[in-house]
Image 1 (cartoon, rainbow over the protein chains, first blue to last red):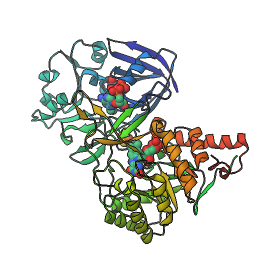
Image 2: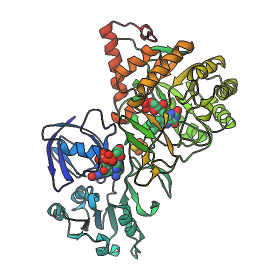
Image 3: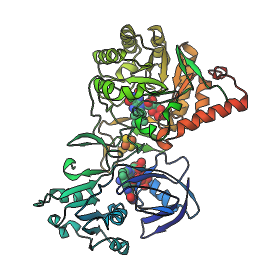
Length: 232
Length: 300
Ligand SMILES: Cc1cc2nc3c(=O)[nH]c(=O)nc-3n(C[C@H](O)[C@H](O)[C@H](O)COP(=O)(O)OP(=O)(O)OC[C@H]3O[C@@H](n4cnc5c(N)ncnc54)[C@H](O)[C@@H]3O)c2cc1C
Ligand SMILES: Cc1cc2nc3c(=O)[nH]c(=O)nc-3n(C[C@H](O)[C@H](O)[C@H](O)COP(=O)(O)O)c2cc1C
Ligand code: FES
């Protein structure tokens, strides 16, 4: 059990929840959250948005019952979280771009924060449908911040400028990046989503077939080398 | 401290709490979270003769008080299981129950035969998986087919054998009786209920396999009733399960007739739940001055 120290709406359906405590996590990992006792039955997976000395935060979009319940929690309420889980983005050198679409921007802030002074170049690309949020936050960790609202963020991306691309967002967006031709052997890592139950690799409800065989998104993922994934 | 030990047929369990097949993998992942040697036992993910990739499409769906799953027995196959997973399980100080599934009688026989050459504590024959099209559950619906498979399997293994029954059976009491008559050492029940969920916008079932298995609190009252009905009609011991979410539910199953209890879905909600259930049972025994769990098994 941990205490909520903030739960703020950034727009109609996007929130940041801040939870007090000493938490750890690698870039691209997630936690399983439940801000209620019994129902809904399953906990909800959310990516690490940020970790500071005395707290962890998550950026989430209200989709259904669980995230709705989360959004109704108040400062001082208790919440349960398990984690950090999953196999996140690799620690790399060189020139890196982070590309997020919609709520897929969530894992990229912490990723930027950790990578910023370890890599030669870190650019962040954020694509939004209607309004841009948190741009000042992401700008802090980027050499250059690219934004798009209502158009394809991938149009601005030249993958040949980078050694690594880390992306999270709608599958078509990630696929578009993976399909781009690289003369530079750019490595692309994508973060996938599947419905989950245990979150730790024991139940196989999140299985994902890749070119390397059956994998568990919660344990072997959520981050995969883009070329290993079969897209819909 | 209370003595939570129970004897299930010829086997001693240090406590009655066992993790249910398919919800606990082969124990490795939960062992990173707590020391799984504290458990009474572990029932492994269902193993089949050959590797299975499992079902395509959505595999999990939440219902108001349960979950539906359509994993479809994804597993490495019996040989890889023996090579890669069994050594880890053997080192544990808890009872290891190998859950075996299949689509044909021949497949079951071959898989059981290979497992029987190993040192395992118990085999749980899953004749009740609703998530595999060709069969599995087919053996657990009709008493006649269930009897036949138990008879054949009993002839080829000396390892303590329990049969996992389906709530979808035509007559679960009659099947349990047939298992006893054919020499099974115990019964486990219940597996998941066959259910259906529909995506109305796409006018399609949620699951590629159409039907899926319902587990969790939603099925508890029915599971409890079935355990009780079977308890009254057979003399071999029962492992009861279906929606056990806490120690109180566990005590209910024991009072209904279960010697051991299996916990499935609850592990997803709280990974530490089995430890909490064991502790809850101990505290209950202390409070109620219960010396042995035998005192409460089947008192209803
Ligand atoms: C590894 C990972 C990281 C994620 N990180 C974030 C994040 O940082 N911010 C964010 O807003 N969302 C994130 N998501 C998606 C988020 O988990 C879902 O939006 C959320 O579970 C929806 O729950 P609900 O009760 O509101 O919706 P409902 O539709 O009512 O949920 C019903 C069931 O479906 C599951 N579900 C529904 N949509 C998804 C989905 N897209 N992915 C996985 N499970 C789903 C729920 O967990 C629940 O079990 C992440 C998903 C994964 C797998
Ligand atoms: C994700 C999942 C996978 C399962 N896989 C198996 C399996 O491989 N073999 C089996 O006999 N039962 C399997 N089951 C059924 C459980 O072992 C158990 O019988 C059922 O879930 C009811 O118990 P519960 O309500 O505590 O979960 C599975 C259940 C779930 C939820
Ligand atoms: S959610 Fe259980 S294996 Fe991934």
